[in-house]
Structure formats: structure tokens, C-alpha cells
Length: 469
Image 1 (tube, helix red, strand yellow):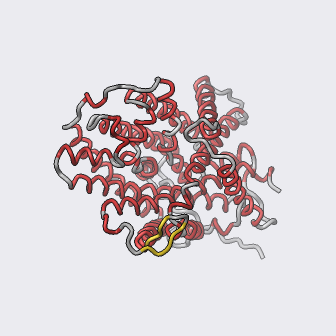
Image 2 (cartoon, helix red, strand yellow):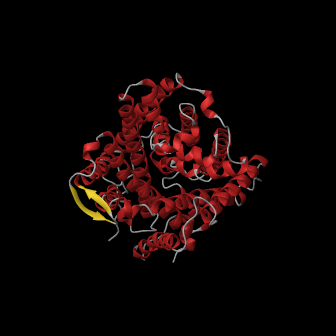
Image 3 (cartoon, rainbow, N blue to C red):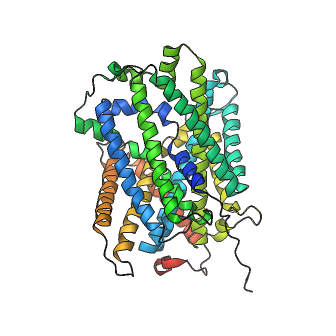
């Protein structure tokens, strides 16, 4: 018997500010507090770091331009999955969509561990207490489990209750974080000493710039999740404005990262930044004599982590929802709650998968960090190539403009550059052979198991059907 009931649609409630909050929330994580010493050491000095940030910003904006050009063509949730499916068929859609789930899931899992470490720094008596067991030589404590579970289920409940609620929470989180960070920046500028920037470089310009450039795109990532929420945009919001929110989130986050990096390099000799795990707070406490500053900055970083988790959780859920709706995995994942208008089954699945993290500890997930970077390359690359392919073969017969051809050419070059950065053994971010390659194949292959588990009599939506079996 055929069911003629109209499918329940997702709530359309994300505003321009909501998309901007989502983008900044995903991109602007706690790296401004924890990674600056590593970034400056990798670059070999402020001049090389400046060049790397400028080039990194250009690379990201070029790749994002592929999203802004393809989103109006297919204003559907799911982002990369739809673009790859329209351009290259079902299996390409499956890989792109599954990578969207994997990369966001891995980062969510990592955030559950990061928030525990951050809270240990804030509250040292908690660390090492109430050890339950060890995994890979790393202790798993009762506090780590409780904190991790609270984060996972708290965010899951937030997103289950409605997209508008999730969006408002994200905007409030980012407003608080940016206010705290800008306040700390202003305070830091009072103690900025240009002499600390000397020497301007201790590495050759090319070597230092490239060493940092291969790391930056993966620290300034997550903006692409905006494309997964297009279907849930407010009815009055145009796709063009959503694209502008994406571009602005990259620009604002990168400028914040860069400004904070150079501020910290001016608060202490930049070559000493790697000698402390939190150079910003340590230098400000030393210069001001106010120990409470460390607590304020760490609290901002905790809110950063919650914001990143919230945005990435959204991306993981919407990737599964889109795959289920397209018939590429069981349609169980496409079910929408009749009251809250959210993909309840996908939220439940992501919650259960990420909820395992606190019980396993950091040793199990450390190997997944490099893989997350490669998943990003597949995501961004699929959109860059899909936008080029679809525009080149568009039915309207209009030739590509010179501007578009240049953006496509540069975007494809960026994708190849990032791919080489992950595959060349000499690169600082290279995948390790054979363990990480095997794990990469296993994780992407797991998506094909879900593909095989879908009901065989269901049609796959869109052009994907032509390539399905």
C-alpha cells in the first residue's frame, strides 16, 4: 500500500546572523590559545607567518567561491553530497556526503576530549582523580566521562529541540567568545613590544611559509557546513546572502587568528612561544600581574570548544540526513521529528557514535586527526570539481566568464597543493604508511556498507540514479 502522506520538512529558521554564527563557530576554535606557538615555530618568524596567513586566506576564499557559485544552482541541504551527485553520480555523492559525516564526527569526538583537558587546566584538582581504567596507556577518569557525556548529550538536546534554538545558541556563544577575545586583545596591545618580533625570520621565506601554509587550511575549516543548512534558511534569506555569510565567516575568523598570533608574538620573544602550552595567558598574567586573566581566557576557549562542537555536530547530522533523503543510505536517517522539524534519527545516531569517545580516551582518536584533514580535501575538492564540471556542461549554453575560469583554475590548484601536502612523505602533515592509509580506506569503505544496506527497491534522487546499482 502506497503512503501518500507528505514528508515532513525541516524547519526554515536560520537567519543571516545564524549562518554567520555557525561559520565562525566552526572555524574559530581554541587554536588562538593553543596553536600559536606551533604556528610561529613552523613558519620560522613573523614575516613568513604573515605570508602564510595571506596565502591561506586567499586559498580558502577561492575554494569557498566554488560553494557560493554552486549553492544557487542547487539550494538543497547536504552541500557537497548534492553537488558531487549532480556532477559525477551516486558513488561520488556517497563519498562526499560520507566524508562530511566523518570529518564532522571526528572533530566532535576530538572536542569532547579537548574540553576535558581545558577544564583540567582550569580546575587542576580534577586531573588524575577517579581513574576508571586505561586505554592505550592513557587513563580514563570518571570526570572525563561525565564532562564528555554532558557535552555530547547537551548539544544533541539543543539541536533536537529545533534549528532555531540551535542557531540562537550558536550566535550567543560566538558573541560571548568574540567579546572576551577582543577584550583580551585590547588589553594585550597595551603591552605589545615590537622588539619581540625580532628576528623577523629564521627560515627561508619559501620553506617557512609553506611549512605553515600546509597546516593553516585545516585549522581554518568548518565554514563549508553553512552549505549543509541552505534547506533550513529563513524563507526571506537569499542563497546569495548565505554565500556572503560563508565568505565573511572565513574572513573574520582568519583575521582574528592572525591578529591574535601577532599580538602574542609581541608579548614575548616569539621564539619562546613554543616553550609554553598557552603563551597568550602566560604572557598576559606575567605582564599584568593578574592571575584571573588565565581563567578568563581558558573560559573563552571552553566556550570556543562548545561552539565548534555545536557547529560540527550540525554538519555531521545534516550529512547523514541528506544521504538518507537521497536514498544513498537507509532512509531511517532522513526521518524528521513531527514537532521540532529536526532529523531526529540522524541526531540519535551521531549522539551514540560520538558518545563513545569519553569512554575510549585520547589514545584511540589521536590517529584520526590527520584523516580529518584528508576528509576536508575530499569535501572541498569535490565541490571545486563539481562547480567546474556543472558550469562547463550547463544546459544554458552560456560560456564561462574569464573570472570564473580563473577561480576554477586556482581552486583546482589549491586542491592539488593540499593533496600533495597530505601525501608527500616529506610534508609535516603527511599520512603515515600503511596504518593511516588503511584506516582511511576502512572509514570511507564503511559508507559503502550503509550504501549496500539501503532498500534495493528505493530510487536514488537526482542525477545520482544514473550511476547507482
